[in-house]
Image (tube, rainbow over all chains, first blue to last red; front, side, top):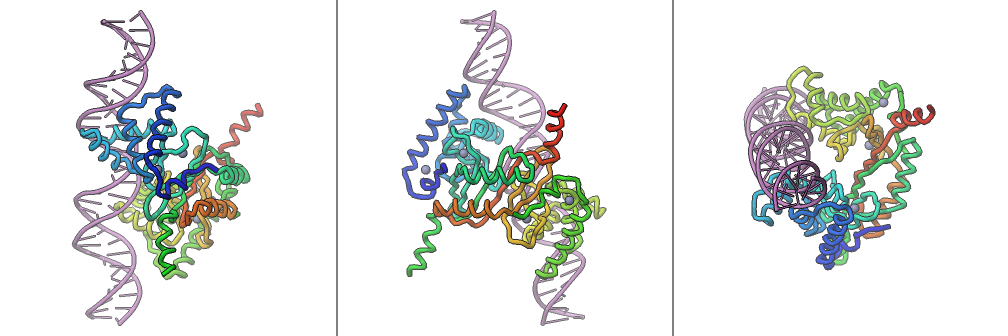
Length: 168
Length: 168
DNA sequence: TTATTAATGTTATATTATAACGTATATTAA
DNA sequence: TTAATATACGTTATAATATAACATTAATAA
Ligand SMILES: [Zn+2]
Ligand SMILES: [Zn+2]
Ligand SMILES: [Zn+2]
Ligand SMILES: [Zn+2]
């Protein structure tokens, strides 16, 4: 089971998250002979500013501010599409939002844990779950191609206040 | 494991699906002291015309034709919201579409099997999967509240042509 | 019946995403 | 180096999905 949950939902040195993500991205681009342009790099970096998914129009605003010039939606969506195709980011359909992928190299299905309180989202690659889903499909002769798995709930951080209350 | 997969992805007497769904809906409304108005009933019935999820604006068109008068988006969305709250339908976030729930009474999480070829979608309530997800969350101190699970692939119907080819 | 609540009608607008076409920039071939 | 090509970006318009706000009507309760 591969996950960034422990990191995401705890205080941590987030600079390392950013650096690691950007390094991986550049490596992957070289490997795939893809171009990491300023726009694409900026969008990826913006998505890694936190572990909270961002919508396309939030990205638009932040990108415009960062590059200090007006940015139109297609610019953002093109960068998003590029990053999605390389597997550097994911789309969270239930939120219409995007988030950086912490392990873009490894084959993995997307299981997200999304905190309804703070908005942070972590990702899991969970072999058992994937196998179970696969065989659940197979049992009814359904050939699995891809999947979108989103779990909503309270992250460790946001559960704590409640525990504190019960101590009083 | 509770599912309507066998039914959905095979030829079947769909009239029975519709009748069962409408009966369940009316029963549930009585039980919950909720009003099944013409608009709401029509939307539910439209969603049950097939096992393919429909978007809000497809519903708008079909509802306008059915009721023979212009229908504005809020009318559709209000009916959708009502049916969602009663658990009579579900939203499929990755499709921006809605589908009737085959077992609105039973507590269940929403696992959908969506055929990328014919668009049909079936639903599963799968205890093992839910338990596994629950405990996967618990392992990283994540308290599960709700979930959105969508599997994409080929249904039995749409896999068959390929099998036929290999017989030639 | 009147008061109250619930549902719908209506208009406008917010939010998310893409189409179409032109321009600039980078890569490759000559 | 230059010309040809492919790739990325700029720009404008618009499609597709969803909601806000307020007026009107219908159903229920007092
Ligand atoms: Zn971090
Ligand atoms: Zn990922
Ligand atoms: Zn049916
Ligand atoms: Zn259901």
